[in-house]
Length: 137
Image (cartoon, rainbow, N blue to C red):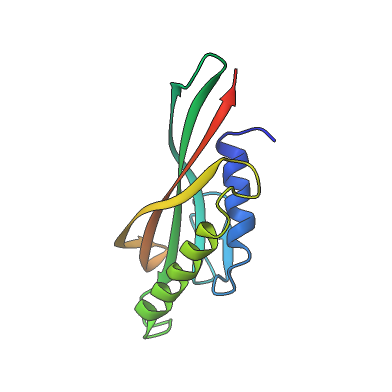
C-alpha cells in the first residue's frame, strides 16, 4: 500500500468510523455539518529526509477536527460529550499504531481547543496526527 496523504487520511477515516461516540466522519473539512459530534480529517503537511542509502524517512501530519454544537439546539453538557469523544478518538488512533499497516507508526501528537462558527457556533478540538514510515527509493 502506498504511503501518502490520501492513503493515511483514508485509514484515519476507517479508524474513526469505529468510534461509537461520533455521529459522522468526513474525509475532508466539511462546510455544513449536520450531525454532532462530528470528525473531519484533512491534510496538514509533510516532511522527508534521507534515511540511509536506499530509503527516505517520510513524515505526514493530518488534522482530525472534532466538532460539537454549542448553541441552544444541542446538549447543554456539550463540553463533557466532546471531551469523552476526544478521549475515545485519541485512544482509537493510539491503539492502531500502524493505521492498518499503512505506516510504521502514527500518533495523535497534539491538540488545541477552539470556539468557531460553522453554520452554527461549535466547540472544536483540532488534533494533529503524525505518521512516519521508511520509504524505499
